[in-house]
Length: 115
Image 1 (cartoon, rainbow, N blue to C red):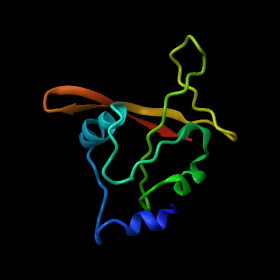
Image 2: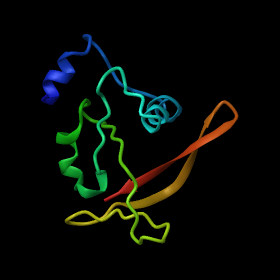
Image 3: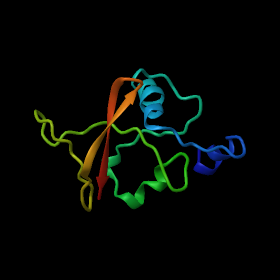
């Protein structure tokens, strides 16, 4: 199904602007438990296999901001370093990680990446 078809299935004026907490507590948690979203809005792709200019065409929804589920890939089989290399560069973590809380419970971290 093309992106235009999926967007047209949504009600007029629909905007997808979830908070970091909502992304983790509803979308990511459900994804890990294999509970499908009621609307196909966040595709699963291996994001680190693509250069930044290739990502908009992979998105299900959005014009300036896109969301993806991406499995982790490790640089070394027995290591903890993520593999973020693409065909023409790599994604590098930058800045300070932001802790995400649901109420008083720590539920995740937000990392900023640059290409």
